[in-house]
Amino acid sequence: MTQQSQSACNGRVTRELSVESLLPWQMVTLGSGLMLQASCLDLRSEAAALQAEFAAADAAVGPAGRAFLASDGSWSTMALVQRSRLGVLAAGLPTPNLEHMPSVAALLSRSNWTVVGCHLVRQPPHGTLPWHFEDQAPYSQESRLLVPIHAPDGAETLIGHESVAYPAGMGWTGDFNFPHQVENPTESQRIILIVDVVSGPEVRRLLPPALMDKLPLRRALAGEARNRLLQWRASRSEPGFSAPY
Image (cartoon, rainbow, N blue to C red; front, side, top):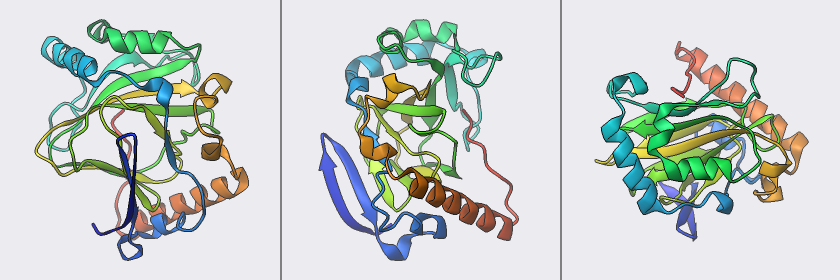
């Protein structure tokens, strides 16, 4: 895909995609001035420690502790904190898998946020998580925070008119009300720690205010982008897509 401009900050690579390459729902954010994603420095973790702990978990957790929903039939997620059945915003329940990830357990316990779910998510080589959206953003009831564990060069997340790639160990989040797609065209697996939290003040203070500004415009453009994606799916007679986590 052709890129128009590129910037790098603390290892993060953000690209503004060329207008010619944009799909209808990506065009919505072009020129809007909205911040669509940002780093979350309080979530920064030592990449080497996370990678070592993931290797131990990967070796120890059997099939019963995984979900096998990747495009090639291989495993896609390991739950570390399972969502509660008590309600959408209830604190989740730690699983035995979390015992293999002490750095993650420490990360989850060092803040007074409400963790509703936490998963290790795997994208296989040459895997694509197609265009989808969730009601997750700092201004929504729930936010999704991500920490790459294995982040091969070339893997990227498309959100709006941007492409972004964060290095291993650097936490980040985005306005995932906008359609986004995750691509891994490399020969290596991509492993991400995903933490779903209630969007309270303790979460918002970790993030730049620009990720939550211009709310009427932000909500309107997110709705327009989602509608364009849904119309495109309908025109192709494609079913809706749900992420496997």
